[in-house]
Length: 164
Image (cartoon, rainbow, N blue to C red; front, top):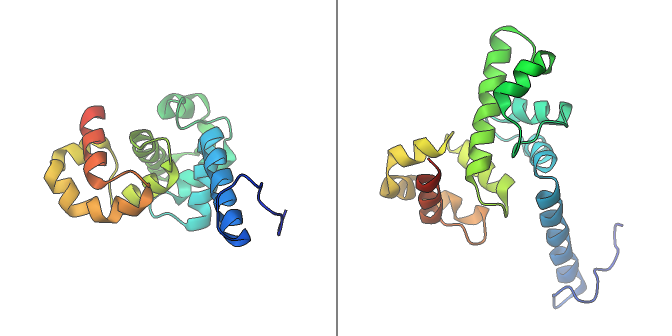
């Protein structure tokens, strides 16, 4: 599909702009329809800090869903999926952290917002709430502004307080 024109109804002043808008629309649709595999592949591609092993796990276990699967139950029912010993314990903790943060974020641009929070060391809504609304916004708000077109650090702090 390289070089294909975007449908005529896609906005844009130039062909290149219309193609870029169409690509973003398709990307949003894929993220909405298949959020777990989308996040996993994006995290591997971008080498998201503290989430690479979880992303590899998600790719290797396509039946695991970040929205509906309970991580601990899945691991207990599929112990071979994580291995044994300390590496397995660390992997399970990472999967749970990614899942907590993923489920905290708004549906649109979830992977980007999840990556930004994980990169800033945020692992749960409870951590955001402990920082306090102003503390979270002052520390992380500016870094999160670009992850979601309508998500400000203030909005995410409010969302965290509601879900903690």
